[in-house]
Length: 142
Ligand SMILES: [Fe+2]
Image 1 (tube, rainbow, N blue to C red):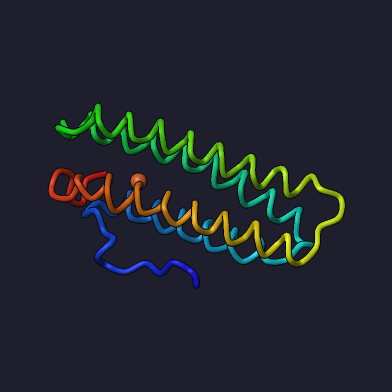
Image 2: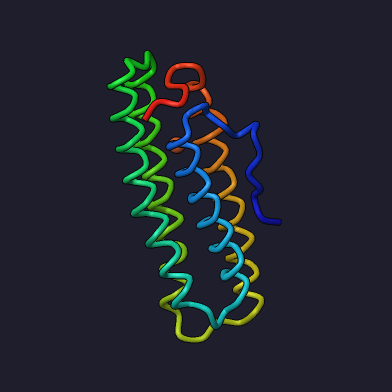
């Protein structure tokens, strides 16, 4: 099941919300192509995009947090570092899958289940547990 955006996920800043929507789209795309063992090129494309964009997004958040004197900046920065480390693990699982010459549907399903689980936790840690603290600190601020 794809992740769906709704207003409960809003952190109260339009720019950050748009970036979170893009992250959701990339996770959903990744989850969809993971189920198809013949879609390895797209799989690599989506994980690379997600990895690169997550890094940019965290940097953007930290910049805004400095600007708006967000009190949990240091804690958030630490969280971003561990989220990137978790994404490194997910990326290496996907790369190992991509590099295998022949993959059965069963292997694709197993990798998909494993990555989906890790990806959901990653998403929840990021937006629900960490970014929600920004709510009220940078409302509609660019
Ligand atoms: Fe975020």
